[in-house]
Image (cartoon, rainbow, N blue to C red; front, side):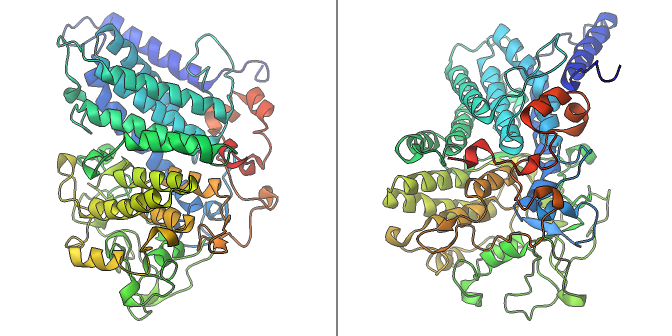
Length: 547
């Protein structure tokens, strides 16, 4: 019987949510309980659900991209450091879960109800969020359920190839832009500002966000033969219509009054104690990779705000140490690599389930925002696209703007809902910033600019939050593609693990397998059709990574 009856978990979820809701509404005739809630009451939960998918899975993707690595090579789950995965487990399945369950049908509800009530701004925002979630899901998993997502009365859900999903994301974004541009919005229902705690109801910023998703989307064509002559222009077109300053950044704040509205990375929730910053990012910020020397003059002033020092300060870079993937902590005592939560920190600084907004560091704090897209990222998308088109002056301008924007991001004085500042102690001074911009870490003219410069500065600006985009970048350049201008890998300093899991067959990881408890339990025929029952499926190249 178990071999003949197969039903997708998504159908179960959808039926449960719809019938459960119907039963509740049937027995609840209280006029104070809305039977068809306004989009304004649904939207806050949708915004709050986004970090769950990204941050939960960041514990694994963050190791693929070497933002951080496991504290010990013998700890359970360290297989992620070396491009492996954990079979028969929902570990790394939260982006999948949020796409189809956490946000899925709820966004469709917002769209339907918004259309009925002429709440076009809610419709546009919901479509943009739907595009964002499907973009993330296909970026991480490759083939996913798209055209049949949330389809009723079916026992199996078809997977679509990645190029179909990207075209779908394109359509969703353009539909979002259409609705966000409509001016005949009803005044009979709650305005967008009631449900939108990210942008406060500012439709122009939602429009910029949708354009930013499109810029990301078209960059996925970078390995196609006509990218430089066709798709690069699309990246530039939509990036130019996206964020204009850090005030446009899409940031999800946390009230940090209880577990579920506290940053997943903060000490209160105690999820990051087993990780240490990577040597890859330490070398990017201490001058070794970009300037060729870790002398103090070459040290990036962002390092003291983003990374943590060891107690020892005698190693030539102020005590900043990191670990390589697949390598246990080589140091002891005062030279151990510190926790992400602070300088000279080797235990949770406030204790698990103890709220203290003053503890932690950078984005690893209880009340720090969760960035979703930033002005800095948009500038680096422009820089790469212009560089690929051989417009070096435009690429250089965007490259410098991207670096400066990240300085501004760290220095930002206020965040939504009184979330904490990201800088450590005092902001980066103008003198520090200018000295860095004039240093060997930053190219001083467009003639010397390389693709490596752009991609490594983009990596720095996205460290600690934009894990999916970083992983897309690494895979687009196959982890160790050579920059012809330097003869070195574009992602110079990224460590290819010396020993890969046996299931990899000597190959690097390119995708995360579909969520176990929904797909490998209930949707096996489709997995067999796309090859996802092969133990090495996680090494199959993505559509965007092949010519």
